[in-house]
Amino acid sequence: MTEMSVSAPADRSIAGERPRRPHEERAAWGLVGPAATLIGLILVVPLIVVVALSLTDYQLGAKAWRFVGFANYADLAGDPVFWRSIANTALYAVAVVAGSTGLGLAVALALQGSGALAPVWRTIFFLPVMASLVAMAIVWEFMLHPTFGLVNAVLGLVGVAPMNWLQNGATALPALAVIGVWQQFGFAMVLFLAGLSGIPTSLYDAAEMDGAPSAWARFRLVTWPLLAPVTLFVVVISTIRSFQVFDTVHALTKGGPNKVTEVLLYTMYAEGFEFFRTGRAAAIAVVFVAAMLVVTLTKVLLVEKRIHAR
Image: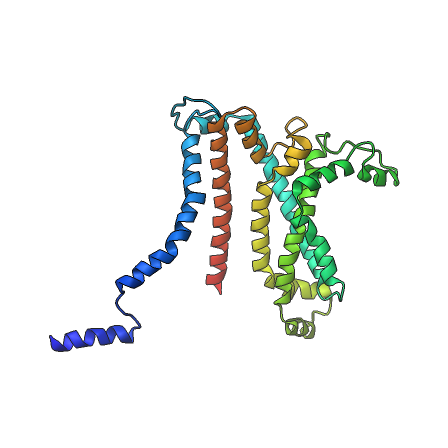
């Protein structure tokens, strides 16, 4: 008995374990408690309230409401406007993610080691990310104006007839996507610059010695594979931000013309604050959160798969 009682603590000390002390546990909970409480109040409680509202027929300002279960979700499943907004959001996200990622990478490659003016250009290209999108949307509205807009004036110099970009069903959503690319590519540029700075120059020298003399070959064999984690992060963050598009739609098109620019968040806004169908708007919010959760979990799974592959 004596040997066993003496050897057990020795074994725990060899394994690096020691018994927990009550005051350490209390201190740990005291440190975690404020942050956990704040997360619960800001994130968890509002999410629970939104999910609960989505199961009711509550209307903004109404004194009475009743539980309707999944009726709001069933209505959304049969609503063509809802599906149109999802399709528009998906098209917008694909265009903006592809454009901002490609343009951000191209600008980052151009600015890599470009001399004393590189910080100035980085600041200029990053300004749209920091600017108020509503204020910039007003500027874009003047630039795209059908009569005195700068865009039509420039196109007129090469013989292109003026267009009403924001009220034409064929050009309204692409015009919003161009604004989205302009607003987001600076963020991608900064991340790609950080990734490029971590690539050793010796790898480029080794690739050149192994028969990759051209810049494109070195990019394909060295730069692009090593930028894969950064690219994945940029794509996921850009996708989430693209799905959150609302400011430019509300300021420029109001979802028109004929619902061609109606996106998911604008549909939620219209249901909640124009038609006062709060329960239905909450159901759209739940769908939106679920879509963002799927995108985030996909990114986490891809990162873990890449880590395990190494």
